[in-house]
Image 1 (tube, rainbow, N blue to C red):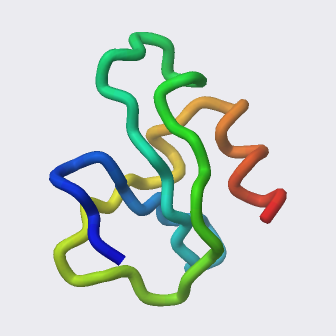
Image 2: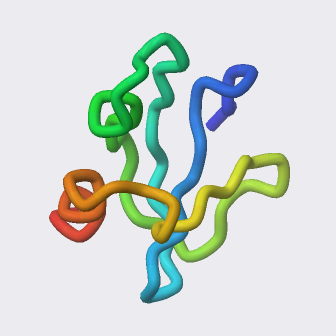
Length: 67
């Protein structure tokens, strides 16, 4: 899958998996900025931007483990 010029990032969970998320740069609120899109992966693409789970708010962390 293509990453489309910064529209998508991979969020690294604490259990070692990665989740693909859509980033809305115009949204100021952290909870509305990321929307979970893809399934969990063990290895993200080499050109992907990685965001740590610790950098996110609690609302998004709950969505990461619902998958």
